[in-house]
Image (tube, rainbow, N blue to C red; front, side, top):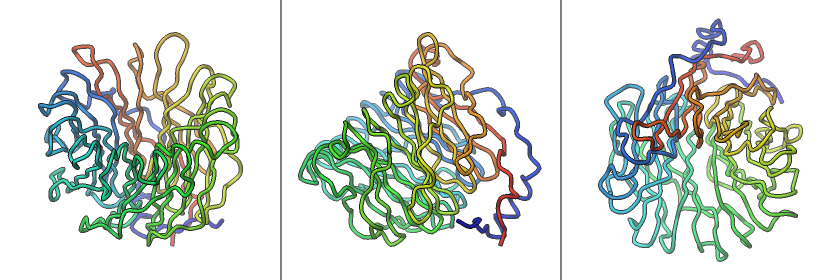
Length: 413
């Protein structure tokens, strides 16, 4: 495949950062949540413009179970995302266009749509102010709609976005994967909600989605019953108009045991990277593996192991969704003794640049990692850690600035 062509404005930005060498983390790790009573966990992160935003679920702060909260690098204090506060609002995901400064948050809300869980969303301006009111994403409301994922178009000021989620019973056989497209400028749905999985026997769960620079997108999920042994990772490509491109396909080549919890990210050229955790494949418990795809949907080389360290479990990967030049993957790794730490790795064309530990505090476990990087090199890794003053889980993060990619490998138009 040829080298991607970069627009002039992007080329100027990259030229300005080309001389920046790899640097250590910027400052120490920091606590993201201000309210530190009870459990604050399940972070999600995004880079908007040149600033980060992190969201999470917090227990008891909104007066009734879990609520969804956020913090912007620009300041102004943490803010509550959900307007409806009865029961639990949980499992938030945030995403922003690489160029546009607006962003969106989606989450699962218990009982708000009239029957168990429903999927809701809120759009925000560049000043971290709500853009309109929160809105329901799912049209089908019977039983539960849970565990949403969110992808935003990687380039272009429109910031079109796609939400995917699990819907229980809607595909006629257990859990299925459904989605809804949105116009990023108006927030209006683009067409009706759609079913992603074609195979409906057994559970289809844990969806993730990434968009390319033209608005085409890839949805991945874990499916039970399609592979020789347990869960496997599956995908479905879509055009920018929301039309399926071919049929669903299996991502993982290794099929012994379970392959679960996929994540996906896209870059400017239209390539995608899918990562997941695989049981027993690296010789010791869980390991993190990945597969690259071209913008034509063809696998590039074979699946490969992400983590260099293989002792005990490496799990819960997340791929940065919105890259210009390279992919970043984060995961949690169990090391000698109790607990886990958070690591991340840059990949250029499938080549690693050297995994790094994000957390400095290593007592207990650092889990639920999330990552977001900007094309110019600034990025954030966030995670859950039992560091809050009362000893309960809180959301912590580390800001980084490095630029591990050689710009000479890319052609500017």
